[in-house]
Length: 470
Image (tube, rainbow, N blue to C red):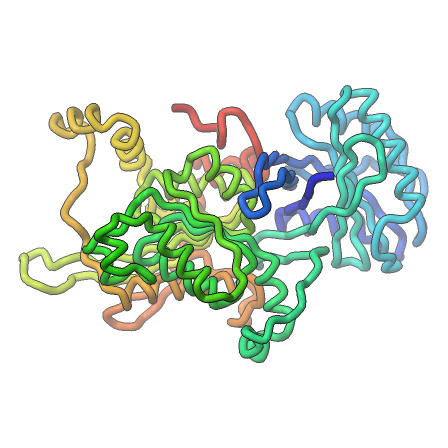
């Protein structure tokens, strides 16, 4: 049986609580429709896996409810047949969720019997190859999950996670034993933090000044696994800010992903790392990114940012985008008229990078053209149809590293709430020249094709990938 895990949108977790937690202590139940991502090859263990993402919560109609107590809940299957119909029509996965208010941690023998009957009904109605997701809420807070595939009693999912404004909650995964290399971290945030970090698979897209710093910071935090993606090689001009790079790397044109991966392995901290040399939309990169729990966007191109924008919403994977603005003086003299670092957190419910004005779809289109058809790009550039690359931007290692630190600290905030705010900051903007920081507020546009379209949130695999044309 291949590995499985489930990601719930925080808003869906809250809806389920209202539907399945009874004030009199009786069990409750509800339906859920889920998207699915089929990962052909997990980059770290080379095995297939599936991930299920909540798409919609559906109450069981009152007329279908039969009885409930602190030890059982029953209902008629008419509404379940309707759920099966919708799942087939919309290419989604049906699911059932019920509660164990008494605190029994897991699925009971009665759950096994009832779910097998529902799975058989689903298979008879929708045909072979169907799947049924089941989740149980234990004691009002903890979730366990499993996926029925062939009618045999399935093992529990690896874990159930909840993603939303309050950060990331990982439930059901086994915490690995503590590592003495990270004892000082536990003194700051408690023993649990090291186990949480060890469970994470984190993607880093872009391994330049900010990306290489992010990788080394994550390594020193002791995350479990990393996927690093970049299509560039080391050049001499990178050496002032690319962590781990040497002059020999520049002379030999070593891939940036190889440099950062070697530095991680050399540290001996037992962090798994998988380098992918190429553009973020490669097939191998798609599998790798869909396996991640969090992705850091450390690319300075608009196309890559919009790609990660969409990925975050379809697969419920938080993206922490890192930005740095070092703008030279307009009079040509040495110096900077603007120096600022930014960390932006993306997930369904937060304004996306297009709504924030961080990513420009027109610039992204031009970058895609340059990558696919350089000759046509140059022709259109000559005719002023596209925007060409400008002069190299200034870069200072302390500034790129400060931007990376802001972003990685936001990951910690999402895991342990070290600021005591109870939530992520959507967007932090720090003026490096004055050491002042502010939270930039903006509303997501209801007509936005990314963050305004709830039909994308948790949709999982679709054809074409991420519902992109061209």
